Length: 312
Image: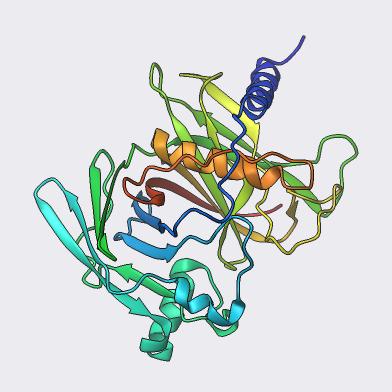
């Protein structure tokens, strides 16, 4: 008899294939479009609530070359940024690496998962240094940015945490390998409610990484208890090896961060990851789905469930 979870997993894979095949091709303007302000901002609730932070940069023409000697100039400075929820408003302050002490640079490195010693640029970010606003489940957060004579706005919601009932490392399918394991997850999805998820993995406290396909929705398992594999995220500079990619090394300590996100946040990452997976001389470009009014990028809320376990 075919396992019902196997049927659901196959349906999930089919849905992913349908989604990828139905993406509308988009032909970008060559070099005529003026630069736009690019927003990347987040606020997190759940197991590890954080205050909001925003990174502002400028877009570059699609086929242009980037001069690495002038990359610092892509950051948008001196913006006025506020985040509002209910009747509370916080104004974010701008901080750049060059202005921080070594101890503060270490904090930034841990928060953003970057190696500040090897970045080679003056990384700038807008944060709430008082940490007076932390992400909370069930709340809406409104972003407003004033920069370079423009006003940009966006809204995100932090959903309720995903209900992860079990995480377990199991032998690889087929012939087992003593040193590698697959991670299986059992998710209890909310019934009659569209839910969207994104996940990250953190190996031996090296920092969180998102997988190449880090988002999923509950289109084919709404309201069910659903079991599926969760591949380990790999750094972008790791060479692809079909025999080991996405599997977990025995003895490693892993943190799994499984997040609930809203639909606009999901649409951004699903279209962006589709483009990343379809690069090449014969590939087409798909328009990225943004939720920023007056600019491009993402303002997203996370509700995180974090589990720490040793691969055995």
